[in-house]
Amino acid sequence: MSSWSQRRKSSYLLIFAVFLFGFILLPAYLIFYKSPTCFDGKQNGGEKGVDCGGHCSNLCRSQYLDPNIIWARVIKVKSGLYSTLAYIENPNIDAGADSISYVFKIKDKDGVLIYEKKGKTFIPPNKFFAVFEDGIFTGERVPTKVIFEFTSEAVWEIRENKEAGITVIKKAISREDSSPRIDATLENNTIETIQNIEVVAIAYGEDENALGFSRTFIDKLAKGGSQDIAFTWPEPFISNTVKIEIIPRVMNRSQK
Image 1: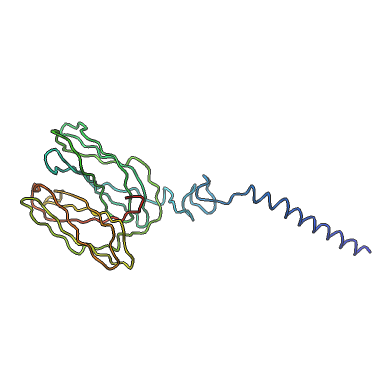
Image 2: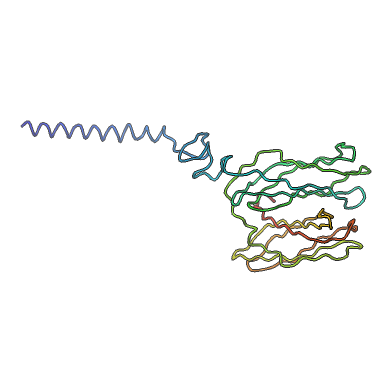
């Protein structure tokens, strides 16, 4: 009798425990518990910092290096019209940023600001890249110096180097005495079509300074295919070109 009573008591306790868990504790857990995410403002779920590192695509500050601005220059295209370019290195092998704001500050020989150009760009991983702006009208004022600065913090993420599969297989300059023209051919060595490619060309003189730069776009480069592109200028450069650099950069749709 005592043994049967004990078993019945245990059964009641088990039923009560199941009821408590199934109808009170579990619903309360589901209502009030929030699993760790990369956007909850807390360091949890194996993250290396608050909403960064670990399983999060965003990198923590200690996981990436700042980009290096190698040089910036403003160059005359024709009377009163200029273009400008910043040449930048991203030393991070597999990290990039989708969006970062910048400003070009263009000054005259006295250091007076005569033009300011703001914009947004993106940073591909493990690559030297160029930020280019054209259509800079200064009238009779002559730019002699440009300062390039990033003006916002980028959100750094693990990124694939999409440009690694693009090869420049030909580049040449002609008509240097009149209206310079650079012709180049890009080849896609991957097994996938690459879309939305920005391509910048830089012509260098004997002193390694840029003589001219320009930009064009390729909508689609088929797998295993190639594409001819050209860059032109309306007036001769100030000296002969000794080196040509072609810089492709693959954009996401949001970056077009």
